[in-house]
View (cartoon, rainbow, N blue to C red):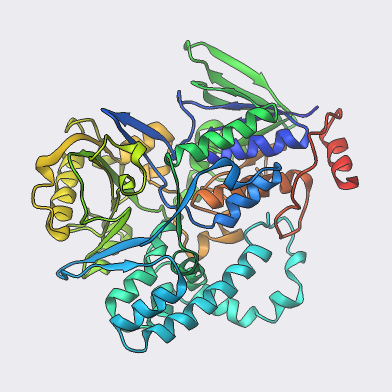
Length: 535
């Protein structure tokens, strides 16, 4: 049986471990922290429960597909509710917020009410988005790019000219061809932030994202996103994965013939340990894996490679327990500045600075989920995009973070209070915790302290994002948001499936057939693959 080690207990690591165990590997997962989840963590204080990372449940078919690979479903694993409104948008200097509804027809009417003719334009835009999305799922997202032969098919070849335009034209220019109203342009451009980028830096290929929130709608798992992590961890354990927490990997060990030998790690008692393996999968930050865990002469992506790359934004997270209800906010609320182009330039430009005021995001899951706050109170999670710069400092509890981080949090609270019409918001805060870029670096080994990973610019998307296997160490593979296909919980689940494909040398581009065969108990990976293909 193939001995496999997975580094990292975030969603990508857990999903990779589960898939490989199902394939017949003997899998051990090592997580450096006491709790699982990685960026999708959980913090609790005084009856409040906070998701510390992802809070949007988009691309539901990706989650459903993953569960079905194991013979279950999202309905069996999660209590999903559809949000309506999906989210609220508040604009600087505008007293009238815009509520994005849960279905396409309602949003077409909404766009038409804001700008005559924009409804028909949105209809065309979403037609293009769904066509592009379907093409991406069928031909690109589930590909390891090990071979380009599968792309030489009629449905791709006849769209080459259009695909080239979508790759070369930035998203903001593409949107400008459909709507004039700056508020509508911001609504269509905001998905670039989910990709760790800016509308002027993101290829218009990613307009496909608008299909997810404006047509499909936004879902939420009751109990929070930690329930998603718990469900995948349970699947991994049921498949036989051994999970070891508080195990900080210090090195990936390599044999003289440049094949992976295993890992060295520090256990929960502070003692050094070695664990042998035939395969090592790192779902940790790729920069950390390559520059800290792999010997310098065997690095596929050394520091000089990263010097030419662009990080996604950093973030200041502000978690607030607030006394009483906040009807002025929805489950998801977005706050957009008038000149948000300047915001993005401050974050991604050569000379960076913290935007003020900032285009920021507020999540209030207590609007939907009674379990996340004491009865009658409100749970707020704020995300302020900032440059990926550990020098901004770390956060803390009840104002104990670095001065810069706490000032950014204060400004965000004041901005939400003013724009949303909640003048006493600051006075009603009973619980407060902040997180800064230095925390992302220290706790998650994030490159530059970024909140998400490498930005989805043209040269950092698809096969240009990098490969999910080492080019110099046989048996070393990667998964997670810092490798292919990219950022976000659905992408992390897909990265786990692409990993399995890469190990199988499966160059197909579509999702795997559901369900996967039951765990194979043969002597080695080659036999396991052979048995799988015969089934």
